[in-house]
Image (cartoon, rainbow, N blue to C red; front, side, top):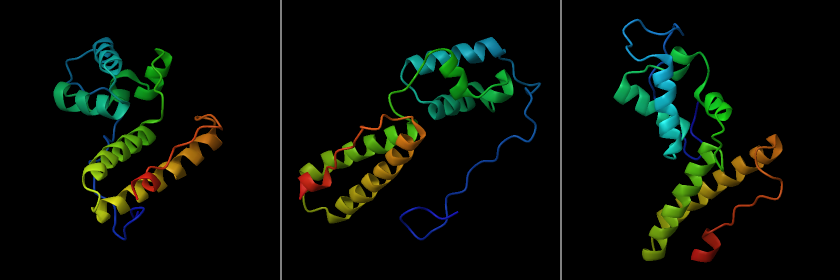
Length: 149
């Protein structure tokens, strides 16, 4: 599948495990993995970060293999709710960082254009999340590009 704003294909990534049962070599129990995930979520980590930390530091292939349920559903059951969906939050954070950069480097036209593209993605995603009922209908992202020019 192609990327959104460039004419190239996407990056390759690792493959998911074929069998979705707990590996025999894993020494951590289901309760220990859940406890680690809850601790990381309370620190403010998003589900993808938690999954990466579980994989890299604890040797857990996937949360679902060990516990039998998805990480995001598990966190919802435990009452951990994020203000925004992860992809939207990351884009907003990226836009804020780029805005800080552009306040210092006003003539950086390439990054000004990339900020426009990021904001287009934010608007597109927010429209989707409003339609799905995840964001309130009156939620609005304020465009920063107009202020910079």
